[in-house]
Image 1: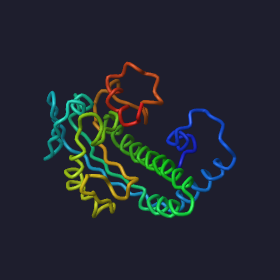
Image 2: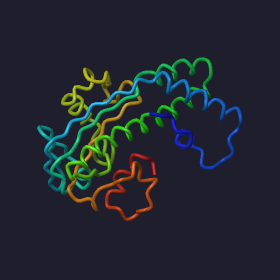
Image 3: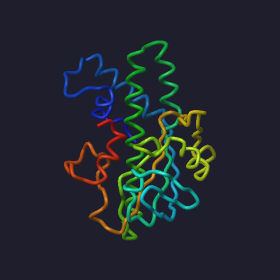
Length: 221
């Protein structure tokens, strides 16, 4: 896990602009502190997958979502994943909100970069395990993307035992605490040509991909 400088700048809204030396120094300081203090943890489990036009059944869970159904079409197995980088980012945001608001904003961006980096690492492990069985990954899809309701967080948390296994809880509004945490559904397909090797749609030149419109919603494209 690392706080990628380019990704941190993207979350801060930079699009190729010149960065002031003071800002660059604060980013470096925040990244070092955050990487040192974070405690990444994850849990993932694989389930049988049944897909209809607007519903997906994973094990005992049923999700009503046309977007997710498109993403998982043709998949007979899928993985439920939950990951977090721990409470360090939240503690730092609280600390710097009092003493240095600019740094607090940078922590938000660096924290987002860190959790994305960590989930990419976990996804790569899942990919390697799947490839050994002749299976390939679809783009990951999370509650809150497209028409997949955020309320499904509760079902995922219950089946994965997120609080017990990785120390992540849900608020009354189905937001995760620590805040730099992610849940996702990853389809497994036997057809390599229908899989995805890119960690983000924004990094991919294949603009006609049938999965792009759905997974890109999560990246703010």
